[in-house]
Length: 313
Image (cartoon, rainbow, N blue to C red; front, side):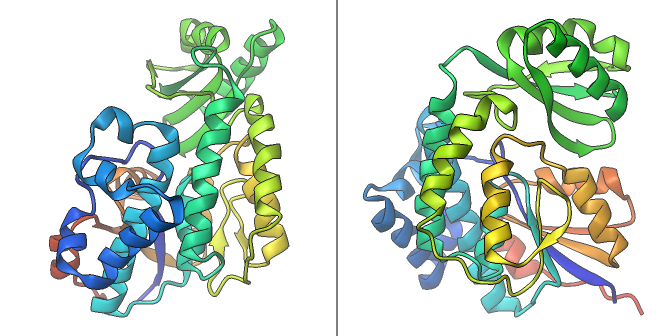
């Protein structure tokens, strides 16, 4: 049996009604949603379960909503199956879920921190001035070079999420992303798809948000990670609180090295990935990185009840 990694989704995986099944079925999972409402001082759970979608899609709500849903599923999954992972990782916002799972952050501290993170990210760049786009089919280095060429013309565009082979998200000023989209073929891009986001996340334009997040994290207590958490910024494992803090600050304006993180985990003998939270985004990316990886999506009460680890002798 190989090693197991728990992975947690980020923004874009949200859906109205997520987590409602475990909220209704399990007292401990319900307690997670109630803790979130209490820590934030407003009924987040109502927005998660009933929408409207436009309200859930606001970054300040999406981030705490996804964290809460992931931790509620995690709570019940652990109670039912008792599985301990060898590693944890999360995509962007999902890194906070991974840190809660690894015992670094208390859930209450995490929820308040990601709410603030969402606010800072929304406020860093005035609405309509930033953009993001998914670039399909381009090679990483060719796209990096094209970003550099376009940015050299005075408009910012950078690699934001290195998700899997052939899928990279770019981020920057509206003009920069547009210029890159027009020239995408030069880097081998087959398609460039604009994303519905409220800002240029994971680009240098987010540095004001990073600085403000640093101020919040100063007063947050962190413990050493019980299992190594693979950081988005480095695609390497971290366990020490001081290093984790710095990486969370840098993460807001740095590329998410998801493909590299999964490749590192595979290199450590991980053959089983359990995605915990809404949707199946990470499962899809992991399969594109390594088709032979075993991937489970724990995104419903039914998935928790049916879960059975494949064992290969």
